[in-house]
Image (cartoon, one colour):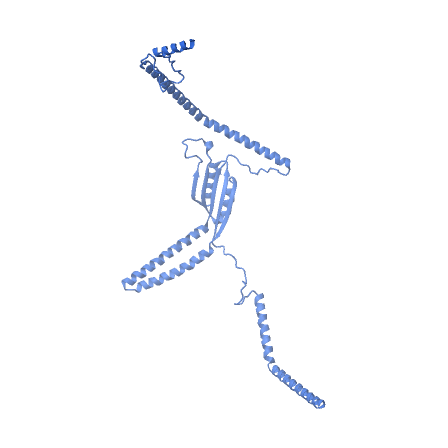
Length: 374
């Protein structure tokens, strides 16, 4: 049985091997028939990739690219320059004259100005030493001379603060121009429609729309003119302060060692203490006249109160003495005891005489004495 199965298995194996080789050959033939197409596709893809890489290297971005090919420069056509400056000066009037002269030399003008001489409005008279003058002005200078004017103003005194800024209004101005062209085209179309309309009601509606459009056009033109003026003339917000003295170089205190720190602390403490005593002395000098006046008034009030108190006590004593003299006597000849409410202070009550013994009491006393003798 084994001898029969062995040849059959061998034959099947040979048959299957031949079938597999035939199928592989057919597959190879079929693949060879499509080989030129696949090669052309691969070649097309490689050429397309090369073209994309070459375009990327040349800075050309495809429609599907999300990267920006080049950096755009900022448009500097509509820049508005502004500067805030604070300057301390010793000679205030002279510094104001110098600023006005600089404004005239650079063809500028003062848009707003606020001057204060430093005097208090609550006082009707004060000396010049109590004044601290200051000036706040908004100055407009042509943008071409903006930097030169700022440098010239800095040399007038001691500059304490300076803040500069630039505002770019190019995008807003461009948007306004585009919006203006749209409104102007719409205005022209409404004018043409209005010329052809014969119905009065329709004409009124078109005129209302035309009026609204013209109002918007006027607003846009006004804003564009303001931007052009701000670009042409820069802003300088200047604050000028009068001072008695200032040092050009800051005072540097060395605080490296313990001794130096201790010395600086003692010096500052002593200066503060002297400043406190000085202010206290000035306060006493200012308040002293008021204290004297108040003391005199209080002294007079106390004297008046004492005078009326003594006068009232004297009157009370006199009235008491009069009442005592007019009081009735008792029937047995004993004086009436005084009313405690009528007795003035510090006056002792009058002595009351002992009453005389009656006849019945005398007889009783004699009988008792006789009994005792027996």
